[in-house]
Amino acid sequence: MDTAEVIVSLLVVVVIIVSLLSNVLVLICFLYGPEIRKQVPALFTLNLTFCNLLLTVSNMPLTLVGLVNKGHPGGQGFCQIVGFLDTFLTTNSMLSMAALSIDRWIAVVFPLSYHSKMRHRDAALVLGYTWVHSVCFSTVAACLSWVGYHQLYASCTLCNARASGSRTQFVVFTVVFHALTFLLSLIVLCVTYLKVLKVARFHCKRIDVITMQTLVLLVDIHPSVRQRCLEEQKRRRQRATKKISTFIGSFVLCFAPYVITRIVELFPVVPINPHWGVASKCLAYSKAACDPFVYCLLRHQYRKTCSDIINRILKRSSLNASGRRRRENGRNHIVQTAEGTLPRGTATEEPPLRST
Image (cartoon, rainbow, N blue to C red; front, side, top):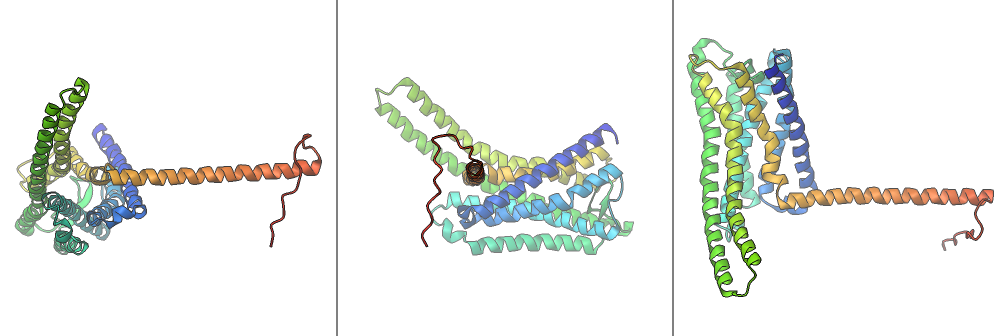
């Protein structure tokens, strides 16, 4: 292995560890947070988390094995199953992110009618579409033997393993597949989040007007307080932009290089560096490690649930430690009483019997 392959292998290991720990933490928060489970977006988040976890434990380790061994990580049938999972889980993850953006758009643009427009039944219907969409493309690719080990990406994924006569069909399938998964999800993300940003900026302007009117009326206000109010206005305007940029930017940064490489690969006249192919696949994998932080763990409810779990564990451990200390003190007291080694003035009375 050369230096580039070692770096990419280490990157895959880091992505596997971070993705596994962060997604498991999201599941723990979902199980221990009743407020989180009551929310409709929790269904989309749960579906996205399960997809990321399955991708982490099924596809990423095999890509690491392919990088190290520079060859097929298993039999042909096994690789087809893994390739089916790769196509299904990646598609389902993209569509789940699009569903989350639609949910946020409805919540911000139509806040009064949100609970009537987005119910658990509606969320289940959206998830049903994501599953049908993902299963259809994955099944077609598997039935036509368009999944297998791809040397360029060192993983079991979409590839044309059949004769050259089916090349045109494979090209059409690949273009349609990425257009209805990556491109469709990207358009939904951009349209919905930009509308959310527009509404957020409108409300920020209204708050800024009220704040400035208040500052004008408060003549005797201290200059430092006035400066803090102005700084808070600036942070308020930047906060929504940062969140929207994170949602769209992480999606484009992680998936766009891989999708563009898959499209360019369809034209044999364009050479692709093998290191770039593996690196683009690792970038797509890294989205599974980013999603828990982008959509869950940085939110207030998840942080509060995590702190409650930690406090509960620490409290339980402190109670166990104090209980052990009391038992040890009790045993030492009995031993010293039996040996007559208690210091003078120490009470040796027996504890009162519990009444029956």
